[in-house]
Image 1 (cartoon, rainbow over the protein chains, first blue to last red):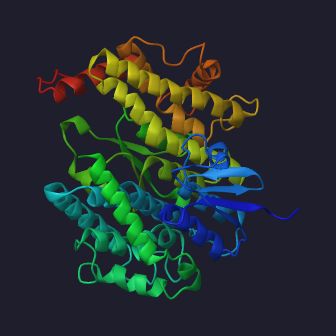
Image 2 (tube, one colour):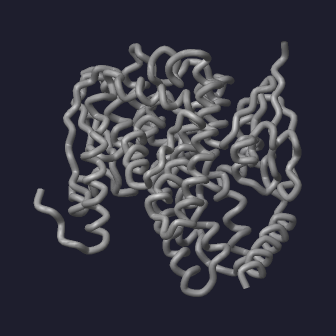
Length: 222
Length: 235
């Protein structure tokens, strides 16, 4: 029986795009279902009743939720082009920094987007520190995973397309080549890779999307 | 020297459920380790700050010259470095994904909701916190039913990743039951989990590292009074 792979995702979500990137890197054919997060489908609610969130991967009818869990599932099920390293310590480090990205950097990015004044300044300081820590992991390497892109490069995908857009909408300077030369060099390498470009988010559409969300949040807190 | 022969240490505290995860995993693999106890209520030591500069938290697994942080990452590391039976994670990718999903749920949602009970101010807030927490327990009871496939543990015949991820919280759950005066694991709503909890706590890899509930409750009182700025008891 041929494998049936479906991905419930959302075009602007870095979590959803990272799963797409992993599937494409492995050459796994899949059906993509775009979810309207303001009107979630019955199927999404059925496949992820606990969190009711995207992304959800459905493989031969069995759902897998949570993007980092999905990435590991993909790597274990389709063992060609492995995205996680072989060595247990290297795997632990990749997982550690992936968790750091999700629990610290992405959360602080949200704070930066939605805060203003002193609070926003503090959040920008926080994210600068966090990005510096992450940048250290790239020093002396072509990619986070070494000579080829892997797990941590995939998880750090939001730096490639999202960060610059958020910064542009907010009119702030927190992420520049001057501040993070090693990360910027890595981004230049990544955007030359075909599958990474296939997961590129449309810039203008994304700028509008961020603007709408920031305005909606600000008016809801007035 | 074989990787698995290098010296193993765990930096942690006896009261932390997260530290317990690392110790249970090492016990399952019969790996000898030195337990370096931190006294976190007195401040973070130089040793801790050096071992986990990013988060400054326990547990840290020290394996030879390598430092591994984050409890669930440590458990997976242990399973991979000492791959001999018993396996901590299932071999099937779908089973592994289910276990990792629920472990993430426990850390991101469920345990914080248990802590909210302790921090709740006033009866209304406490009732709301307990209701939220109990919803989670009902989900976990159902997950247990699905995962166990008629066997005694989430992991099957023996304890596994999800048993460890969940069971480590039982000490603090019992303390919360004592201080709130409410049975959180109940025959009415979570009958299977009650029996699972007894089996888990009796497991050879668990029983020596599961803290005594009374001792934990005393410890909780001590931390709470420290937070309120009262003088620490002589101990």
